[in-house]
Length: 112
Image (cartoon, rainbow, N blue to C red):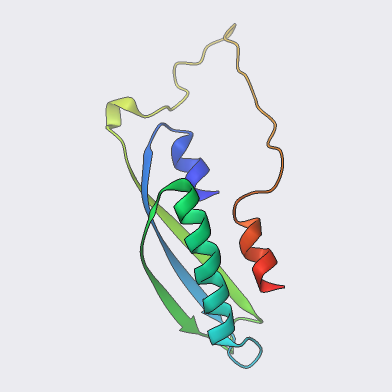
């Protein structure tokens, strides 16, 4: 989802970092992180992005199981950003249906 967000404004995605919060009383940290690493590795190779780091927190009083958050770093010249401000009445807007699985769904399957 993050990669789609930067591409739709015309930006070039460069790298991804993540934050993982988990409840170590419910989730085996080693198994979770190993499976996430496998999933991220596969997806990042497919989309040619570099992984630039992560942070992990153990929060048994706050998190029931686990939570993953990712940030995609990208670059774009500000005068090249697709904003939609130039859309006017009479313009044709084409929407494409998203079909099939999202790339991150492979990660979910690894955790089952």
